[in-house]
Length: 135
Image (cartoon, rainbow, N blue to C red; front, side, top):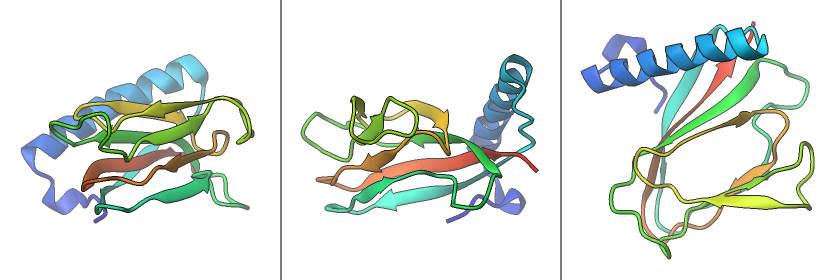
């Protein structure tokens, strides 16, 4: 479900205000020219996964930074659903990190540079996933 400005809850407004602070800081520090955030609630049911991919679609340049906030209380090792994020730009054969989708964990990376995938989850997995965009 895409985030819709018409129906934001108080909690969503707090999260979006935090993202705005992050956007301004990244623009100041890295000169990225980020101007908006587009995001959605993502629910992976038990057994779901997402194969290795980049978040910037071929032939486009608008999605610059991927942002994922995990919303999974009581996530434990063995629950699966880890984000596998390769650590070398453009490479999905080298080193990687596994990030557990624990409540409150925020992950940010360059959308068109870092290959990533979601490993199979052993229970339902929730997040707000989105992208800071350029024009």
